[in-house]
Image (tube, rainbow, N blue to C red; front, side, top):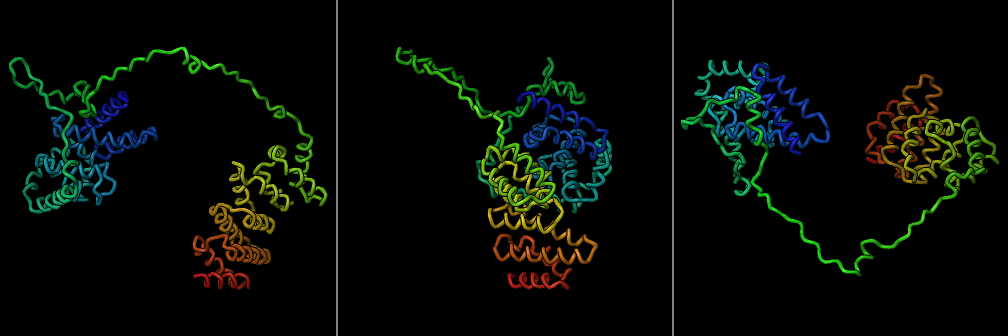
Length: 424
């Protein structure tokens, strides 16, 4: 974890020291770093906020350009300006304690959209020059009003917190470097490498003391305890002798499945197939993949229903449902789905997707005779689902109502529309 802290601090300092790059580019660079390694994104966001606030709040940055970059990077973490999130609270606290020129930047970022857009296109050096020209804005009434509103917001928030939650102290103690005469030496903040070197031990710390916890001594070992440490247990391998056994029924079932995918089976063949799938060991080696399911549904819907009912408890059933939803709508596919809905409890999202697919299929058919026939089938199918309370009408009310209005010339669609109105 220490290595992760070092990398985070080094990355942030590297961005902060780019005083000639526009703020917009600094924000992009920070977002790219935070989006790396998705599993650490939350950890990075939290410690980025902590590190940035420590750098500016504890006086670790001497130059105004670097402090302005930190203020903007903190502002870039504010997602919703109307909510008092952690980055927003840090900015409001800075507004209460920072020098006037930094307060001016904070107010512009938080309250003035035009100024904010202008600042994002400038670098820290350019903004320092802008502050020199705009110093009179600090005394303007408009700035003072905006500042007062933000501070009042922060004051109200603090009033709602417990005193113990507001009682905090920084983990960083100022220790200015002095020469032999006792006077402070010039700051080395203008050099990124030396600044990072000075931050070698300044990471996100707390005041938790490190206690020495020696391992407890082992108790004397008695002769009667040796059996517990090394029990005499003989482990025997239990073989499944049927694991690689070739079952003749599997070959028969595979052959029948292939025939059923290509054309209708004879009644005797159907009975044989249905009796074979009663054996789970044979069923799961039948060779029916989700890709073959649409052909089986079209040619032998009864067989498809029986196999799907056996597969309901399988972990691959969602793949078979997906194949059923995405196949072309037909009388046989609706027959299979209708039978499944009455036999077992299907996932609501599967039923909704299938109904949507049926509606879109009807709308996209150009041949009027075929379209009218399929619309009648869909309407009867939907009425059956609604009356049996298999589908929640409210989930698809708008889509089904629009479908009924579009095909209102068909008697079954008008009947379905009346049923919807009665359920309102």
